[in-house]
Image (cartoon, rainbow, N blue to C red; front, side):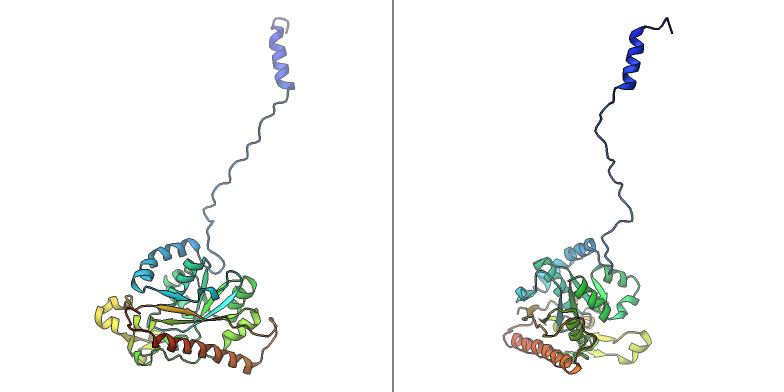
Length: 293
């Protein structure tokens, strides 16, 4: 093109030949709307944080929970926490889980019967709060493979359905399955004695004839229901809680064995029950008031 200025051609050529070095811009990843903190068990730390905030006033001001022996709970690694169980609507599990999580910063998985998985809405809330169905497979994975703290109540519904006249008399700890799980997982059992739950929602009468048609373990009539009406189903009395953590019990057996001595399992199960029972009697002897400790 004879009529086009030479300088224009040079500029065009230079732009085409000279490489331009620019910083690489990496786009930020888009937030995945499906991303959540729910683990394989259904537990959500965000939901647990919400529950802790809601439950904190009841823990600190209503039950006024006091702990003894928290140093016996390990800072890391698996351990099976074993506690007595009481109250028509149990108030011990939330207190134990809340206390350990706030004081030690370790999550606690509460193991309970399968019936919790059958309750609409409540089953989801229970799982988000750290509830896991109590069976040997789940317990082994939590303790052995994941090194978590698992909380069990060997008395089960036999403990929560007790009448007030039977308070602080521990029921039989089943067949000692929790001991065998701890042996197989290679973790210690840590006994925990809870005083105060028995008085938080005492059962005066059980309507056994209604339990089976309703598909529930028991139908209690509590002092709370007589005093507060329907609200008594959810409102516990402000009994003073004291929780004592006993020294860990280690088992001198190798983990992951195909079977363990039934007699040894039962002996250790009774040992754990007796330690908790003795601790409860000791705590009761020094208690001056149900409401003030």
